[in-house]
Image 1 (cartoon, one colour):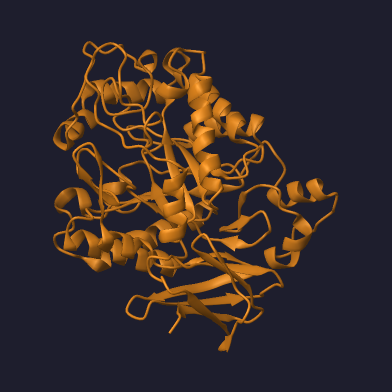
Image 2 (image 1 turned 90 degrees about the horizontal axis):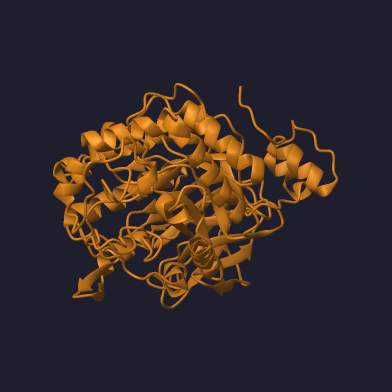
Length: 474
C-alpha cells in the first residue's frame, strides 16, 4: 500500500480545479476536467503534460561546467575538464535532434559545501539551465548525482564534511577510467555509503534536508520534469528507508514535484533487479540505467536479445512499482560500430515498451570521450553524425489520447504511431531537422493533414483517428 504526504494525484487535480472527480474514471475520461498544473505528472504507469496529454521524454544527460562539481579550491588538480553547456545546446537538442528532455546531474557538494549552508549561486545556476532549456521546449530532470560518493574520494557527489569516517587521504585528478573503477569499490567509499544510509551523525537527515531545499527551489518551475533522489545508489541492501525519508522531506515542501528513483546500481551489471518494496509515493517514476555488457566488453558479442531483455525487465520492474519507465542513463561508445548498433537496438526496444530515456552523454572531454561531439584540444570538436542520426529518431512527444505503439522505420525515415481514445487537442511528434531538412508530411488514418505547426524540431497537429504516419516530404 503506497503512502504519501499529499492527496492522490486525481484528488489533487480536483482540488486545484474546484471539481469533485470520481477516482474510478479513466485518464482519458478525466483529462480535460483535471486541469493539470504540474509540468509533468506520473500516473497509471504513464507520463502526462500540463494539458493532460500522454508524453514520452527522450534526450541527453549533460555534465555542465560549474554544476558537475569536480574542482577543488585547495590547490588540488581538478578531476576532469567539463565542457560548457548553454541554452543553445538545448536548442540543438530540440531543433536538430528532436529531443525534449535533459537529465541534469547536480552535486550535494555544490548545493551544501558547508553543513547547513546552501549555495544560492549554485542553485541559481541550476535554474538558469532549466529556464534556458525550457525556452526550447526541453524538460529538465534534476538528478542528485554521485559517482564513488564524493569528488574527494571518488568522482563527484557529497561534500567533504559528509564523508564518514573522515578520509585519511584526499584524492585529486586527472581521473582516468581505470582509476575511477578502483575508487568506486575502495574501502573509503564503501564506508562512506554505509555511514550515509545508516544516518551516522545525522548524515541521512542532512541529505534529506538538502534534497528538500533543492525541491523547494524547483517546485514552481514550469520546465522541471522532476527530482531524482540519488544517482546509482549502492552498498545498501534495501533502499526503502532512504526513499521514505528523502521522499517525505521533499514532498513536505514541494508536494507536487514528481519524484524519480533508481534501483541499486548493481542492476547496471545484472540487467534486472527485484522489487522487494514498491516505491512509497504517488506521482513517481522508475529510472534504472541500461548498460548491458557495456562495462564488461563493450557489447563485443552483440547479443541483441540480452539487451532487449534488460529493457523488458526494466519495464516489468516499473509496473511492479506502479510507475512509468524512464531509462535515466543508457549508452555505449559512439566511436565504434558496435556501440552505435547497441544504441540503435536499445532505442528499438525502448520504443516497444514506450519508455522515456536520456542517453549518456551530450559531451565528454575526459575518460571514455563519449558524447555528441569529438574534441579538438580544449574546445568542441566535430559532430559525430552517425551517433546524432541514431539519437534523432522521431517519437511521439505528446498524444491527446492513449499511446498504443510507436515504430520507426530507419530506412524509410517513417514513424508509425497507434493511439486510442483520441481527443480534440493537438498531438506533438518530434521532427528533427537533421533527419528531415526538407520537412515532413503527416497522415491521420491515411488522410494527409493539411494544417501542421512546425517549430523547434517538432510538429503539432490535430487527428482524432487511431493511426498516424510521419515521413519525409517527397
